[in-house]
Length: 168
Figure 1 (cartoon, rainbow, N blue to C red):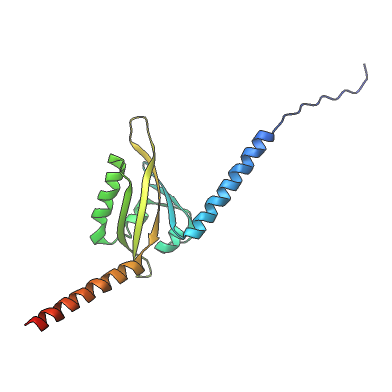
Figure 2 (figure 1 turned 135 degrees about the horizontal axis):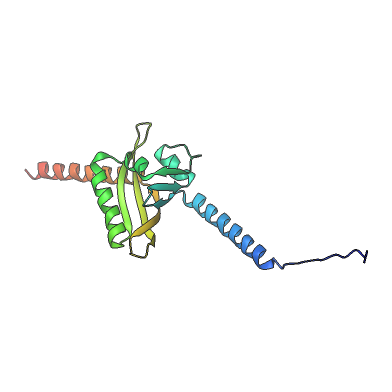
C-alpha cells in the first residue's frame, strides 16, 4: 500500500553477556593465580600426547615461553635418565588406577642446568569405558630445597664420621 513498515526483532542477550563477563573474570583470576604461584601449569591430552601449558612451564624447562603447546615426549626427553622410569611408573599409576600423580624428578635443561621438579596432577576426564582422556597439573622448581637437603645429609655424615673418630 506504499506505507513503509519496519519490523523489529529484539532478543534479550543479558544472560549471554553476563555469562561472557563471568567467564572473562574467571579467566583473569586463573591467570592471576598462575602468575602468583609461579608454577608450571599443564594440561595433557593422553591419546594425542598434546601437552598444553603456561609460559612458566616452558620457561622452567628451557623451552620458548611463547609456544604454549608441546608433546609429552618433549617433557620426557628432558627427564634425567635415572628418574625417567619412576616418573613413567607414577604417571601410569595415576592414569590406570585413578590415584593422584605426585612425583619429584630431575630435568636437564638445554643450557645444561639440572633442576628438580615437584610435579602434581590428576585425571580430570575419563571416557565411557573409564579410560583416562586428560590430566591437569602443575610443577614447581624445588632445586634449592633439594640442594639444602643434600647439604644436610652430607653434614650429618660428616658429624657421624667425627663422632666415630672421637669414640676410637
